[in-house]
Figure (spheres, rainbow, N blue to C red):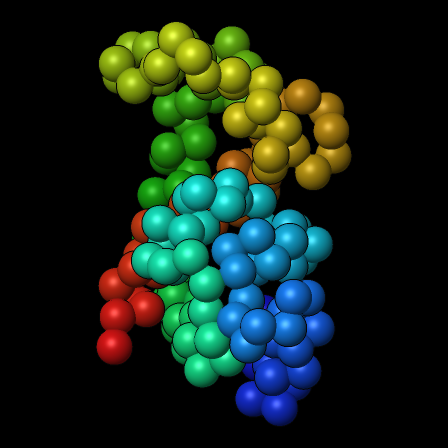
Length: 157
């Protein structure tokens, strides 16, 4: 993600603030992230942000925290760990994670919720719409999840 100047961020904020109340709601922020290709649910985003809306300074701080969290992801060890994690899910070693493989591994780890929809889980990150995850799609999913998990600490003042 390239760095934006605070004046650019302020213009984006004004554009997002559709009800012109001086605050960007979680729904307005979610809309922006969705358009940028960052899949997250509004309730998950609210948990990350820690509030229902942001003023312009909080919005800029949120943006900066995303950049800080993103900057720490270039380590070779992280890439190797991601490949190992991918191999855990790729049960038939074909280079893809199918819905059946995802469900099987999550069941074996006792992490499968009977209400879960593995097709939906995969489709959120399946950029080529082939119904399965290749390593790049898996990597993007895992890095996003790590960033989202770290963001609350990044957002603390």
